[in-house]
Length: 121
Image 1: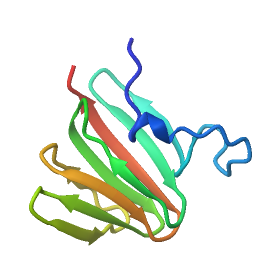
Image 2: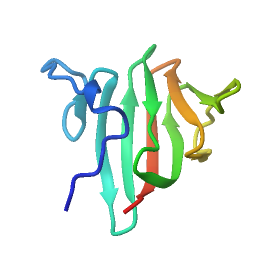
Image 3: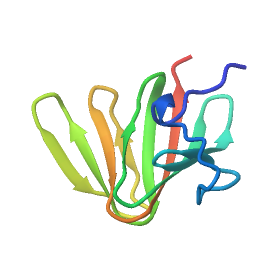
Image 4: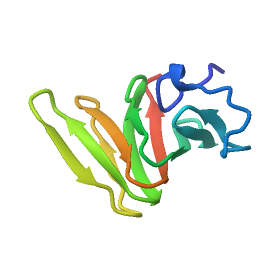
């Protein structure tokens, strides 16, 4: 089985051995990420983003994507091509990610974000 793409761009990988995000998290420059569950029709990941960092939420190769803040304070920037809306995420309030917009998570404090999505294939 082909490996699912990371939640963010692969260039965000970090080899920093001193990362605060140990197993099961894979260290990233913004914090860490790991696949929490994977089934035939979905993948679920957990992202931890350090305070002050920002992460592009990618919809490449995904459909039916939903994100949910599980810890911290974060702002989701949504760009529809004409304007950027900024919405503070609320804990345990799922947000559907539309593939026709671009998204970026801004971590006000350290953030933990849960994602669920289906792959296009």
